Amino acid sequence: MDLVQHGRAAPAAVLAAPGAPVARDGRERRVAAAGRVRADLDVIFRREYRRVVSVAARVLGSRDQAEDVAQEVFLALGRTTVPEGEVRGWLSVAAAHTALNLLRAKRRRASREETVAAAEHTVVSDVADAVVSRDERRRVRAALARLPRKQALTLVLRHSGLSYAEVATALDMSPGSVGTTVRRAESALRKELNRHATPE
Image (cartoon, rainbow, N blue to C red):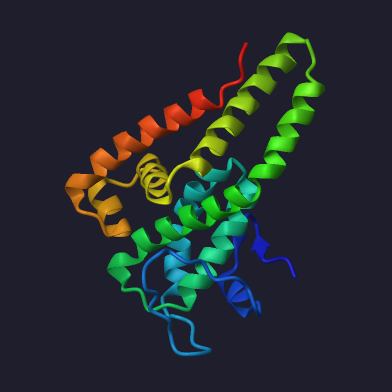
């Protein structure tokens, strides 16, 4: 059954899928009674779908994969009793967390694809520019997947447009520590990129 309609997952269809995976956000989940779906899911879905896809797409670089992550995240939300005031942060963390899991699971495959792409490198300048750009994005995503989870999540959420206060609430951090964590994460990301840089 196609769960995406016009580029947007249908909440009722997603929630009806038996045995679908449930995202974990690293904090205690408040799970609704068995078989019950939160009443405000449709409203939240319409309001937050684009943001969830955007957060996942920042990590994965793929709209299709980001929409798959969004389906999983909204499925998980539908089974919780997360208060309305915490939903936005919960969704952002769940999207980033689920996307990072997917990214890490595919890291080896991406490495093999880079090797094949390098072997088939074309000298034509326009193609070369496209390959370099694509390789740079792959390198950044691979480096992001090697960061400690808290640093990676903080970096993704902050660069997805969440304020320091929203990141702090979503990750259960003190607001004053968010800026420091982001700076350390950016520094760690640069070090990872330099450490795995291909010699000229």
